[in-house]
Image 1 (cartoon, one colour):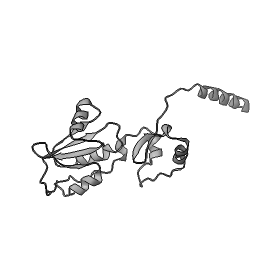
Image 2 (cartoon, one colour):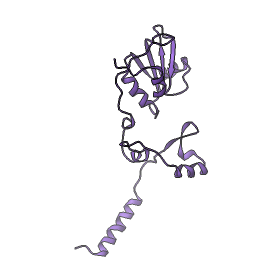
Image 3 (tube, helix red, strand yellow):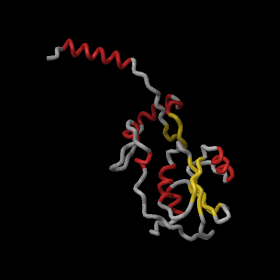
Image 4 (cartoon, helix red, strand yellow):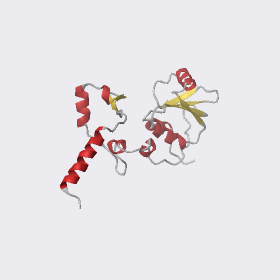
Length: 176
């Protein structure tokens, strides 16, 4: 049988072991004034405001704070894929393909990629973190990730979209 002294002794040992635990600092990014920035670089007032924020979550989806404490991939936050989409004819005509410009650290890119995965058009993904991808993005004057540029047979830009809502506005949800 354990006595109070042995329990207190075990607690003291555990406290000492906890003091020697080493790890890496976790950096938290959140949106502020239209762009993402590290919370540790905010001024004291903005950090205090962040601590008082209330985050909203959809039913059956983890909140951002719940997911931050677990090893959850960004795919967890992607909505269920819609039926395969078919492009609509528009005033400029039907595009023949697209370039999907993305960054590997972009929190807004996975939903757009998911939308494009269910799209019935050939396209290619361009990682702007790579030198070649950056140069291609510069040639199209891409300043935001994600950006999807739809082009004709000659590679000339016809349309562009930067989020799922803009993609839905350009194209129908008709099943192929």
